[in-house]
Amino acid sequence: MDEKIITSIVCPGCGCLCDDIDVQLSGGSIVQINNVCSWGIGRFVDRKKFANKKERKRPDGHYTRINGARKSVPLDEACQLAADVIRAAKRVLIYGLCQSGNRAQARIYRLGKKLGATFIPSEGPLVTMFLEQFKQNGLSLCTLEDVRNRADVVVFWGANPIHSCPRLVSRYALFARGRFTERGEEDRKAFIIDLHPTELTKVCNEAILKDGDDLALLRALRTLLNGEKPEEYGTVKPKQARELAKALEEGLYIAFFCGRGPFYGNDGKKFLKEMVDLVAYLNEKANCVLLPLATDFNTMGFYHTILRDGDCDVLGKSLMYDVRDWKPRKGDVVIGLGSDFIWFLSDEQKVRMRTKDVKVISISSYETLTHVNCTVALSCAMAGIEVDDLAYRLDSLPVKLKGIRKPMLPADWEILERLETSLKI
Image (tube, rainbow, N blue to C red; front, side, top):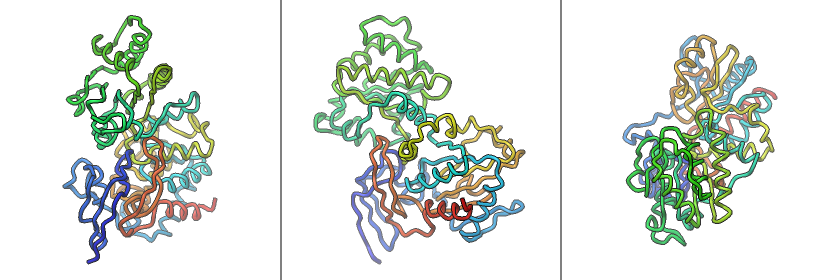
């Protein structure tokens, strides 16, 4: 058998897009992987993300569902059937978008605009807020290498990288040794602000636990930094807030990583605005950056697609904040791109989908709950594993993805190209 070792390839397992992965191939199959986390292993060898011993089933063709029975069909026929479903729709919604390469994102965004579709990104609650704030005020960003080399204060706010970007703490944010942080974690102060204790609680300088009082803590920090005494700290102990404020005041390079938590509920927009204001205030005396902790490997790629088209006005018009805001109605057609759409719906939404006869078209590399039960299933190869593509890291750095396994199915962007041809628009 032909054996080959490929070094320094990019892992499309999460938003870190680690570029130090070494893979050994034998007979076209992956037999060994180095420098990879459990998420990456799952991606490379088709295993479940949190249970690597369990196989994640891949589809072997394209399917349609007729009278409740699943039937295998050729790609061209599947695309034509999907086109017929879309043409009959009163409203088209496109969900997912963040687990596909940039070529597929660009094509489905162009197609969605022609159809007047509503986009629902899988990471919507987090990054939609950042996009809105970027439009209004701009944001302070940096590369992950800057965090590794310079950051002496790191704050994880509503973010647990162990369950979103597993190697972030070891490669960049906490344990990594950089140019000006030669002792790694000894040269950094790290804080975690979360509802519950997490894996990082034991290694951070302080674990500040709160009960949804993000705004109260944020305002208390701003007051402390102004040399005044806050009227309230929310559910946070005053001593903890003072220690964090002191670290922010003394820090030379401060990095905030924000997760989804603070953006759920009615105060999400207020929180981000005041967080951006705090970062701007800290930047008057030191360097301070704010990065969204995006889990899906190409979340930032979709938002760059929007920005490249100059479509910031899409917010509030054709970009839905959260899939939980969707109320299924008769005539709806949902296109799921690289996502398990049905998995994230409430029981009420699932019931309404059945009663309103909502059609679903799935474009996926895996046999997900959605892909198995949809109206038309268009199966595709995996970007960064089987086909080349482009993705954007969580810090917005573009990274090339390299296919290393022979694909048995077409790329998602090729399927979208055929679908657009079938629609004749």
